[in-house]
Length: 481
Image 1 (cartoon, rainbow, N blue to C red):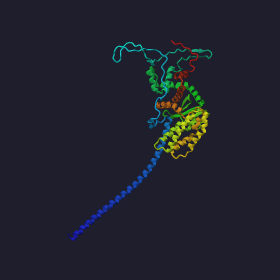
Image 2: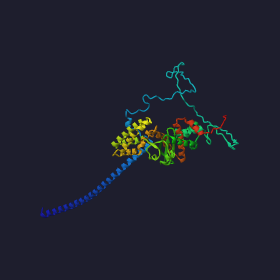
Image 3: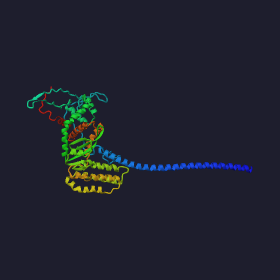
Image 4: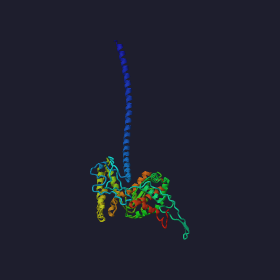
């Protein structure tokens, strides 16, 4: 190969290398630009991740507060279920009657209306004929007679003239109320089904149709309830006075709805009297209106701040305090401080419960020492937020947690109020609330009267009959054909 050919070949190789070098440089520059873009994007994503972490932390804190507030609201109405681990504890108290517990079965009826003697003609197994036996054993059964009959009565009521008053007067027939198409037994049975059995109006109308073949519309039942509330209104006002005079009384409140709008249902009660009232507000004006401007006695209540301004002694509910401490101590994120504090409070409550059953002089003697124990918890230096939260509740209640030690018969918890407001929550869950302000007032009056009769352990039917009839039968005579 000549030198010229070799030179030409080298030039071509050099040109190719320059082209490849230029292509590599372009590719390198393009890669560098891509890398710069990626680095910029990475920095942007890192900043977004940092911002998202901050936002996530804020949301977790907010969720924790909402969850705690939800538990607080649920605790107003429902008691949390027992811990599953506790349910599996073999040493836990078993359901039903305990060993040594005396049975409470119903005694056999002493009033026998009829007697029957029963025997077999043939053996039920081999079908052989049997002879009449000489020995017996007895069974007592109670039953009702069907069909239950509805009685339709035509009343012929004399128009009479009083020469002294110079006006016409008329007697009111027995077992009836003025201006009612149905007799008093129907009216009482409506009250019992609505407020004692807590049935919706549709089922009440259905029961009258099926049991008695009596047609009453839903609107008719509601109108009857309104009219009965007016007749029971005087009794309702007397119940308010009974509660005001009580040596100690309970108060509680829960949510309600009127025409889809949120309102509040309140309970005020003594050991034998209950009133419900449904109000638009949860403010302190409601207990002031019910208990009066100068309330007497001791108020047993939860830790809701609306009661704090009432000028009367108050006993704060230990059950609410223990429930909050227990729920916080059971969380996965619970601190050792809240676990220890929860155990301390439970032990304190057990000792207080035992002390509260002793004579008043013994309780008053121990009062200063217990007040010092409460103050020690308030002054403790807690670092965990959950322990601080319970500490704040105790500080807000302070001596109100020990008022029962200074009085006879005052309980440490507000469980009585929770028990007696629960039937109202059942009605709310079934009906969704009230359809009008008049309906809410009717429910409050009628429910209060029926519940109070049950609390006093009096016969419901006869007690309602006396309240509804009043003095209608005075001077009245009648003849039945």
